[in-house]
Amino acid sequence: MNASATPTGADDAAAPSDGEPVYAYKPNLVGSPWIFRLARRGLEWEYGRRSGTVPYDQVKRVRMSFRPATMQGYRFVTEVWSPLAPKLQISSTSFKGLMEQARQDQDYIAFVGELHRRLDAAGAAARFDSGMNPILYWPGVAVMALIGVALFIFLVKVLLSGDLTGALVVIGVMVLFVWQVGTIFYRNRPRSYRPDDPPPAVMPKV
Image (cartoon, rainbow, N blue to C red):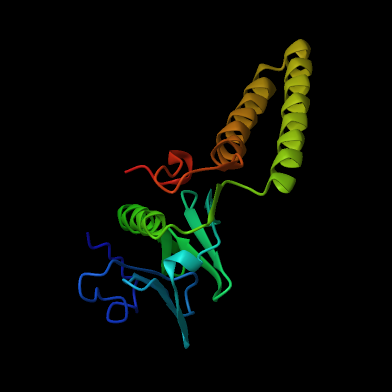
């Protein structure tokens, strides 16, 4: 396997080395790219002048989530915690221009999948979570439900008044609300998972 994604401006730095899977992305337009390499000794990372290596058995926690961004509504993030490094974030999208974030779904799936396989093989005593923090998730679900009920009550009142145009507008708002906000909460339901079975809800679909 050789997963390699090279965002603009990082082609040379993110070139595969000795067949080791490499993944890179730019978190913003003007900053340095994050570069990750799955070496034999561990997960190597580089960001600007900072770099390091996290042995696979020293990874303490991994969290996968669905994180839409302003310019990219289909974005996924894998976070890795270890006492030997800052929190490492691997994003499925990369800045390509002033108003563009490019999807790197195929490379992201391959790299994150191989990372999980190596953590599993190393016997890492890591905690594998997906979705939002439960402290934020469940209050968010309650608020979303209240908004949904309020919209439904408003729709009934509009229908009783005979305003069909207004009712269509309210229905459109409800559909958009369920599609966007509902998708975020559906994909990000808090759960634990095994490293050999990452949840499809927090992985791009290719």
